[in-house]
Length: 221
Ligand code: GLP
Image 1 (cartoon, rainbow, N blue to C red):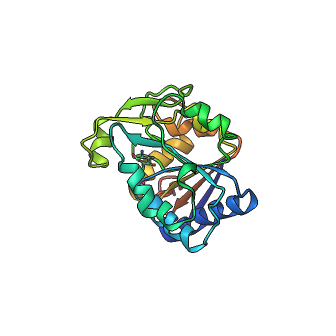
Image 2 (image 1 turned 90 degrees about the horizontal axis):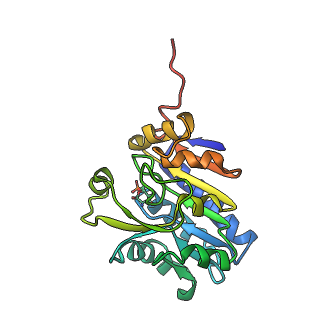
């Protein structure tokens, strides 16, 4: 696992945007697994500036609240409406068949992840088995509070769905993520911190700004 640390959130976001644009250029019909959340807003903003050709790109979002289009609306607002992506190439998890749909479409080339303050990836909350595929999950109190949501359930790709991706990038910015990042990179690999599963993957890069990386530094004696 590689870790790249940048001075500012905007620098980290620009690098993440360039990685997505480079993937699309190199493989125009790439299958991208995409995240929502505040971390992604500047990344999608920078990505749009690079004007990638989305005409053949397929996207599979990582998660959505049950009985809601909130994340779909987020993606329309911040990314899809500003690209030439075909509506038929946009996918959101609806049921357990999502893993098969991903497989039939060629598998995830590039998976872009954020991280929750409790170490969740997509909506795989602490305690989720690393073997899980797409499933409905009960959101933790902490996640509901941080996300300021009334929704109690979400449908999310599983950890095993994520780990099947050819490349994974996890982006974290801001000091609120520092503890989760320290646990992810330095703690024991454990289902109690879902993001630690990424250490089992061969091609994962973690992109951080210095605030998110602040607990990784060695203490001076
Ligand atoms: C949300 C989403 C995740 C996202 C994470 C971080 O709950 N389910 O996919 O990566 O939490 O969100 P934010 O970037 O707003 O901190």
